[in-house]
Image (cartoon, rainbow, N blue to C red; front, side):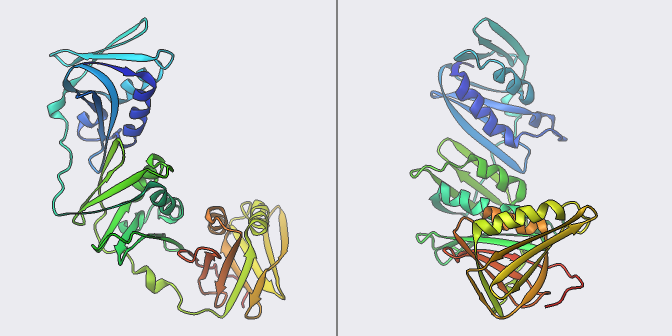
Length: 373
């Protein structure tokens, strides 16, 4: 193997692939990255067996070849060679990598590329393509509600459901839920896949916001997913199991409806949260009455009271309490001038949607307190 590569492009490619690199594994080869030089490209592959990322970097290849180099060490070397515009990489028949940039020369012991696991095989594939910014928006609007640690493994991932020309991403952790729906009218297949939470977060960082950037998602049954971007392929082992029927969690009717200007609400919640976070209960109390929303919090250090007018209030009066973090997540992820809050009573879920996007829904369970509706 022998090639010359732009140092900044190589560093970027390594940062992408390293999201899948394994640090604790029974298979030591996965602590390295697979480098494959051929046809004017350096292919960089990293994997932890559940997640594999292959990305391509344009370069000048004078001799094709493939080998595995220690991942963390190689990333650190390339990062420290950014002052030089190019990096020359060679590998001999004993898999010793020679890295040259400017006056810097390093030799690193590697391994045979044939020892690295092959890319996951996909069979009976169903696929669809959608703009990367749409997929990224679905992720950013739901990923915060994925359970971090739950005995039910399905809740540690996000459900991606394709049906009837719609793509819906759902996340819930037993206390709140978020879902976002997008149109994908050219898709006829019905797909339900649970994507691991770690992958969801990493994928959002790989997606572009460009108008002409698309992502192709290829599903191999309910087991594997391949996501094809412009120069990067992501292979995911999906979470098996039956996801909770989230539609049954949504109330079919409401007794009370409030419309609030989002920015004043966000500011009121953020200020009240300063005191709520100092308490063991982490509570915010909402009191809705006579066109007014009052928000209260208290702790051992003191208390806070906020008050703002509502744009609309139908259905009487209500006092209800929420975990402060859950309400902060809602107002920080919604992008709208106004939001709609729907209630039944102080013990029933609150359902929140942006006024201009009813395909984006939050459900937040209240916290039982001494207050009643």
